[in-house]
Image (cartoon, rainbow, N blue to C red):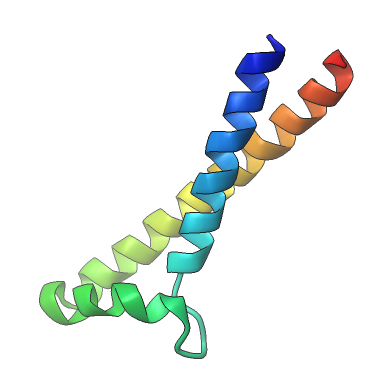
Length: 75
């Protein structure tokens, strides 16, 4: 059970880091990497991509926090 939650924390933390880095920021940081899709697919595609990234970030953060709490309770 400990191994399962440790792997879950690892996967959710990597996913959380990646999604946060790909989100568009006010300044041109790593969010500029996904800016090319806006030119190709148009504004509506970029909005759905941003919304998807926000949802994935929220879900992975919730999974990370719950897994950390359960892992702490197990040990």
